[in-house]
Image 1 (tube, helix red, strand yellow):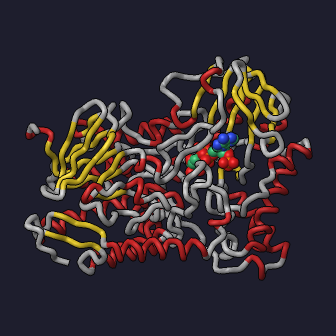
Image 2 (tube, protein in one colour; image 1 turned 90 degrees about the horizontal axis):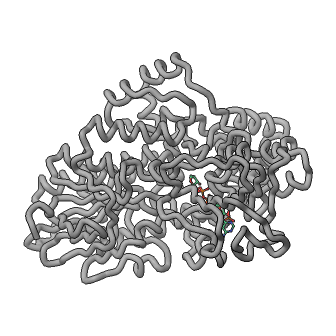
Image 3 (cartoon, helix red, strand yellow; image 1 turned 135 degrees about the vertical axis):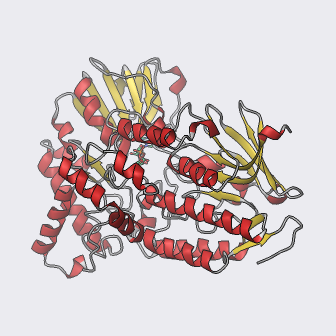
Length: 541
Ligand code: NA7
């Protein structure tokens, strides 16, 4: 293999995690290459360009903390940043830190295998040949393997199709068209009001209604921006120790012990804040006690009934099949109001399931819908999909997809027994999607970079999670999860949205702050739970 293709580290993915990992490793002097399937940086924010795409963590929190200079020079314009603004930010970061030369774009990693003899990973790509590296770091994202609805006949449908998670770069308009949107998760809830504004007629195909709260989005004032910039260090410290990487009041009160009027007042105050974690954070038992949860759920249903004029439509929009907060809450701008428009129709797929695509539209068990365009907002094979799509083979040909056939198994969401020198950033079984992703990304990237420094300082070449540490961590994640109502929901957190996927509650609910303490403790006691060896195979720990 030519020397130019040998690296110290290969990072797969140039989203927020891959870019920061590149920055840190390059700072350490490691020869690093990032391989990215897209033609640009951004990851999730590169692909999800659908109308209305917006982050629902506030902009000044959803940003890197590693560079105070970067914080000072970048100014966010709205409470919740749009996809184009986030993508501009990520491009700015790539330019600001001169990251472009170390990224290979338009190239997808197909397979990787670990060679026991050399202690190196070989990485095969579709268009750029092979790479070899000591460390392989998967920055492949939690929501990056999009899925389409599992109904037959899509190939015969002759109208336009669009997928929220793979929207393309060209501007898409729906003026004068009969449009169908399938899916009412965040992507559907964000895009439906905008598509409804353009379309002649919009049919929303809803399988499961979601709980959504008004985002209360607005421009940021100059004073707010100045204030945040002046206090960024303190804010970052709060983020790192908070439950979800989103600082805010953390209640120690129980909803079941509160008087109904007091509860309603608290729920209303949370509603008015327009923040993702506000409602579920009102009381400590909302995500634990079904009675407390139902009080919060009914508060949201009342809001839906008060907003949507047609009582039958309102009831169809009211979620009843899972506890509030156990599927990802949504933040919206005029979502429920959209159903008061004469050109918008809600199709309840629980009553009349989808049957097939026809040449001109969609057929349910009851009706055939003629559609000029269909939008798929049907979600992702979340958390594990992007990793298992790559043929990853560890020690002695150990196959990652088979290892995870009963659900993901790893240590701290970071590393796997049998897969030496392979790290995953915000992998399953870490706080990841239950947190502000940027906070969790920075914590994982820093852990990996510090670990590599430690190895270098002590002359170790190979690191691997032990089987025991992995088994204990998998059990701990399950134990903590089972204490909550999360496993009760048919959600992408549990793999229930992908037919045949094992039902495992995949994110770690222990909290960002607690998780950081655990990782810091592991590092402080010589990377407890990992084995490190020298190239001559001497076992050190
Ligand atoms: P989600 O939240 O997984 O939403 C996907 C939606 O698509 C959801 O309403 C699904 O219904 C629906 N869906 C999926 N497959 C089908 C089929 N076959 N038929 C009908 N409806 C279907 O993905 P999003 O992209 O909206 O959001 C993902 C995350 O991005 C979000 O949580 C934020 O973290 C940002 P279901 O609920 O499965 O019945």
